[in-house]
Image 1 (cartoon, rainbow, N blue to C red):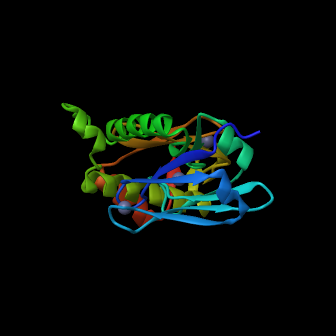
Image 2 (tube, rainbow, N blue to C red):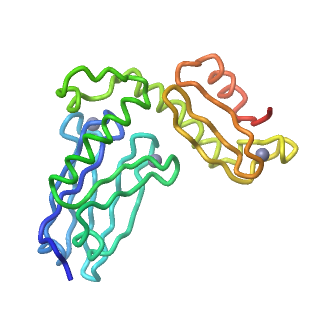
Length: 214
Ligand SMILES: [Zn+2]
Ligand SMILES: [Zn+2]
Ligand SMILES: [Zn+2]
């Protein structure tokens, strides 16, 4: 049984990182599509499609990836939890928060802080910083790094020494304050790509692939 009639769903714009928020009600479940556009730049949207079979399909913009992520959930999951969080399948960052309005708000503030720390924007001198949008320049840099990593991963262009410099069997991406760390799931070797290390990144982009060796 549903325990709440109305929930808040929130995500971040993949272009500018601003918060996109919408509310859905169980009464929407008779069908239809909700499209919440970024209130800041209008360049991305959180889409929620409700169908009569009790399934809810979401298309969630991701702060790390160039494409939105699709999810299918049961209405039951969405309308019975105080807070339910969806993650980017690639970086495991939390990208979509749903549930009771205050819980979602809290989670988004926490998420904003985490993102700022991750992107080394650590200054948190006043509470109003919570509402602040990430610096466009930093955001642009991390995006270039992650977009390139995703492209390489999708094309089998991340190679590892454990496979004689052939495509690594599996890769995990860990996001740190100043760098993305690619770890080979097979042997644990890793490579760091600093968000500000443009020389290294340019070299990889020239090669069209990333080699893990140490
Ligand atoms: Zn935006
Ligand atoms: Zn993603
Ligand atoms: Zn390896």
